[in-house]
Each structure stands twice: as structure tokens, then as C-alpha cells.
Length: 331
Image (cartoon, rainbow, N blue to C red; front, top):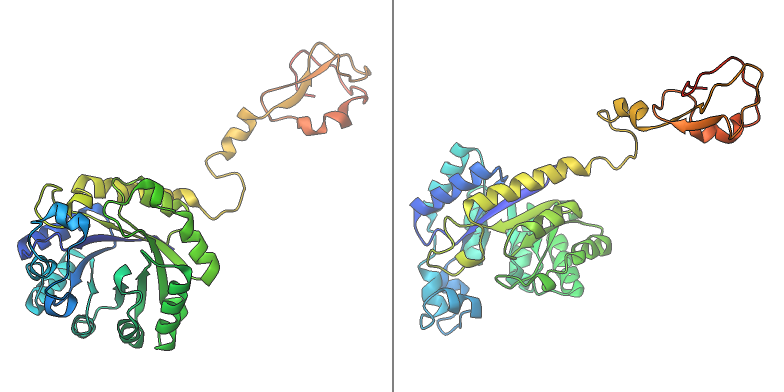
């Protein structure tokens, strides 16, 4: 099955529909399967006194509250209709992460078939139960979570009505950008082995090598933030890929996908023709007369590999030549 690549636009539209559509264009050009935004009501998401994360303070006005920052990045229902229509026109799947109950209902009513749960909601019982009851495909991010918390979240989702086969769990590290030594990519495989579930990876590192490695390690979903320009004002631009980097990442993952193959070890179609060229045969090391006994003194092993295999060397030693041989002639 093809790796499902989500180009995460998030809030990098800065509240502008025009920028949001430009981000969709970039996602289409990259070859990603889906472009994902975020759906929330600031009034339902954060309290007026909530502090910003340290990375947000560095990338936005430090004196501004988290509420004021978030409020400017809301997309209303009309904007959702317009973006969904634009995605359909450009032949890319529209996704959005809901952050509150009203937003879950909005996306469900708009016909969204895949619900992405962000890391911050993994311990939000009513939220998980609400999404689980929709019985849709669910992608669950697990930044900041323990295995026990993942287990509890999966139990809530499945008991609410979502089938286990409709769940994919993403390993993630919730820091922007994530330090390489904290990626712990093997944890993705631990999640897969512990819960017997499909897994993927949501990446917050700088660069593209970690999601490519995740693809090689068995991720079925890759998610990565992108922007039009890292120098733009806003909380997530600095930890996002620019368009040419997103294109490179998707291209590399598609190549990895091809390279992974089916796991059966056998000669590939293109290398079959090279077997006689690269392998060797048993040949005469000098002139041999008919009736002469073959020994280490008169036979050797050389290319090409179109004669008797050197694996039969012990079987050939001590037998009698049935004809005359010249030097380098295959036995």
C-alpha cells in the first residue's frame, strides 16, 4: 500500500484564504496525497490567560497572548467550503485537524472522511469519544505521550465505535523544531509491535531526512509542516519546509517506497542478464588432454558464469576429462 503523505499547512496561511490556496498549490505540485489545515474556535480552544509555548514566543510577538495569536488564524465555515472546493478542483484531499467539539461537528458535516487527532488532545476523553463515535478513519498523533496513554486513547476510540483497522498511530515529538537526538524513531516500531496497529510519523525536525528514514522503517503515513517561506510571520513557519524541500521530500519517499519492494529475495528482472557476466565457471587453467584427471593444477575459476558452477568444484576435482581443452575453455 502506498505511503499516505500529508502536507501540513496548519496555520501557515496566516488567516489569508489567498495564502491557503497557494499552500494547496504547493502541496499539489509536491505530489502529496493530502493537504491539512487546522479547524478551531479560539474561544473554545484556549483561555484568555493561556501562555504561548516558548517556540511561539520566539516566532511571534512575545507580549501577545496565545488567544490573540490563535484568534487571527481561525478559518470560518465559508473559508472551509472554499478550500474544500479548491482541493477538489486541484485533485488533492482536504484534511483539517479539529481542536474542539464544534469544529469536529463542522468537519463531519462537511463530509471529511479522515480525522486527524493532534498530540495535545490524546488525553481529552470527551474529544476522543466524540471523534470515535463518528466511525471514520482516524490518525492519532502521540507527541508527549507514553505507551499507557496511547493504549487508553485507543481504547476510548474503539469503544466509541471506531474499528481498530481504521486507526493509524503517528509517532511524534512535540517540539518545534525537534532536536535530532529526541526523535527516537524506533518508538514508531515499538508502537506498531505493542498494539498491532498501522503506524506513521509526524515530523517536526528541520530538513527531510527523518521522514524519509521513517518511510524506510515502515511508516504508512508521513506528515510534515510546510510553508511558502520560513521568514513569514507566524508561529509555525520556522519549523516548516519551504516548497522545494517539500517536493524533494515527497520525491524521496516515493523512491523509498519503490525501493522497499516485497521482501522476497530473488534475482530482480534487470539483474538476470548480469548473472553470466558477474559470476564464474570452472575452466581449464592450461591445455588438458582427453583422459587426463582434472585437478587443482589444470582447472581454475574465471568469468563468465555460463559453464559449470564453482559450487560443484569438489565434484569436478578427480574426474577424467572427456575431451581435449585449451586454456580458459569451460569444462
